Image 1 (cartoon, rainbow, N blue to C red):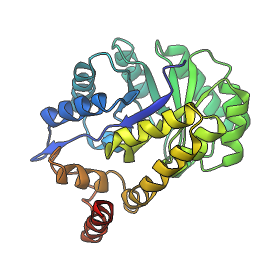
Image 2 (image 1 turned 180 degrees about the vertical axis):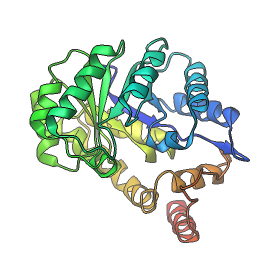
Image 3 (image 1 turned 90 degrees about the vertical axis):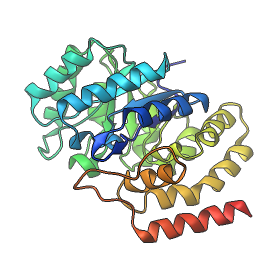
Length: 288
């Protein structure tokens, strides 16, 4: 089975008084490994990498790799400047990561031919497998199906984090079979798995990760009724956690669990009082 399967958690970057809290980060990694997740993503969008300087990003990745103790780690990599992007990739090439998660350049909005060239150049330069991050609401550019099928021919382009919001494209990629399709919009986890997707990279799995692992295992074993029950129980929490910009709500919940401080870096903002009241209501319902 491909390493790009199962439930992966795109880690938050904990802060304490404005600085990266490496002790809390190590604690998160250990707890998710114990929950049975298949892998971790460091410096994905949930990790606020745009708010970190280059030294902080390298230190975060180093901490995650050390704490993971062999659990697969994918490194997030994004930059609009091609030279900077390839320089960062060259540094990642020297690390024991399982792969690199990378989107189309944000803000630039290249044509499809430019997107193809961008990813092929990265794949040629990479010593690690690439996971395409298809997330048009952040990049500003749609990646067409034919573009993705063209990229799938490169041996180092092996998976996709699918946040495009198109069931037709998701199914076409699954049927093509060359890319491992990982759900990236958490509300689509069950549907993607049932269509034949290989897993998910799910920010909401910071909370109750073992339940997400259970959904994946239930589907793999053909226990669809059980998977559906688990997912239905999680659906209200997923909706709440994405009712405001990620990772504010996730960090608020983790802080309530005593795992991190409730800190984000500007221009991100902490979760609102409305979210906190909604989450308390959900917890009360679950307790009963």
